[in-house]
Length: 296
View 1 (spheres, rainbow, N blue to C red):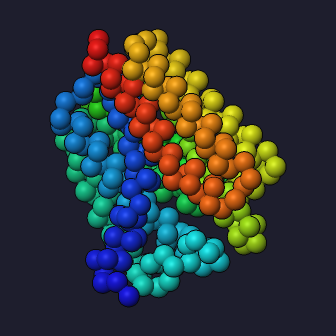
View 2 (cartoon, rainbow, N blue to C red):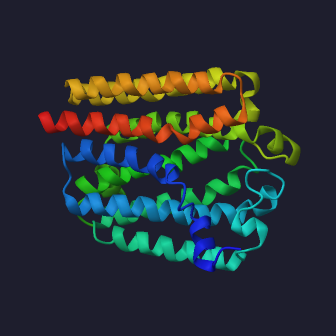
């Protein structure tokens, strides 16, 4: 049995950085677009650390919410909360501490971003429980995992008191369009993730996109990838039509096609590998955005 610190690290998925990288790349991409280039070290640090801390806090809440279901899923039965190695109270206290640390970082930005952080927190808490009621909870996760985008714009553009008008003014339509595009990416990779556990989820009655989509799952994943890349290409190339972005989009599209090949037979290993490597697709898009702005 690992020590308590070791169990806490397992709980926040310390050894699985792919999860927080999936959150990080679209957030940093939005930060670069909002700032018109490098956003400065302060905001870069806030969003990098904040993304890691909030993803870790989300793991705590998710494992508490899913502990009864996770006992019946091969891949999750040994998680610390599910196995009883970490108590529910311990997990909730750790999650609260991590969320408070992330909130401390947000306090160094502006009042508008602080206000948006409460909306982001509410969505993050709602996601684990959506699996009981929503036929495609991956869509709820898509909003939660994409909310760093409007927060990045608010951090760059927000000013004055946190009134509703100031909040709405700080997030332009292009930010919401990027959020919608990123939501399709989350639908793509989290459907791959759900395909890994489909047999277990069917048996215990959890709702997932892999179950809802049925035999259209692979086709739907590829459509989701196409919508994500199409929306982001439309937004970014209108602002930065330089070669780094073009190369990055090509690299991302090739990765998406490779993932389609990996999941074509719906094997657990193939689907999990496609999910696990998705952060490289997000990194390619971010690298193209950062590289293009460096040339302008």
